[in-house]
Image 1 (cartoon, rainbow, N blue to C red):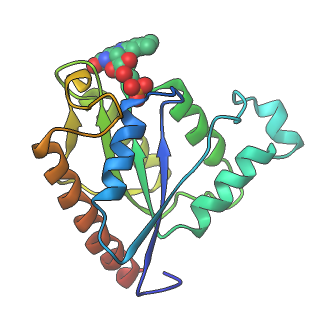
Image 2: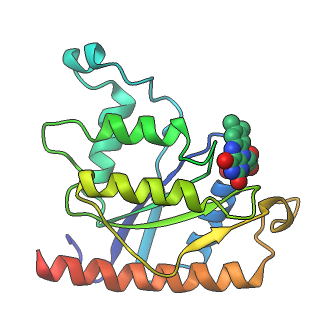
Length: 189
Ligand SMILES: Cc1cc2nc3c(=O)[nH]c(=O)nc-3n(C[C@H](O)[C@H](O)[C@H](O)COP(=O)(O)O)c2cc1C
């Protein structure tokens, strides 16, 4: 950690949709963060579809930016929507690009995962797929609390504010635990 008094978190949202519930969940997480944490949100909208031939020519600009942002962050926060019982192509594509050598930037980073979905399971299946990828990426995902916002269409107001008090409390606990988890991992590194 470059500054032990402040934890810098890079947030990534797996939905590009203007009115995304996952982006709204990210905003609610930022509102609930501890004072000694700063969170910036990555823009993954310009990342092209992964193509090994393109990578052989060098990382495209938006990928290089993301890789650098990941490298600089003390921890990551991913908002993980669910498409067809898995993570979105947009999120997986960004992870695939950023994960390529040299200097795989995810290795050793603490991570918190949140998600909102229309279904009852609140993106649980997508989040568990993301957790599976964490093994290969050598990320350290925080286990608890799980933030699974089901029936998201009923949990936000028309301005995108999270109206569900239980979910807001979970986000506050998650962000506090992410700070503890990040310091613990930094101490062991
Ligand atoms: C291609 C596609 C597949 C979807 N599959 C699921 C699914 O497996 N489970 C679920 O709960 N919702 C599913 N949904 C609904 C999403 O949860 C919903 O569109 C949600 O708003 C997406 O997240 P966002 O608001 O952050 O864009 C799907 C939506 C799309 C467009």
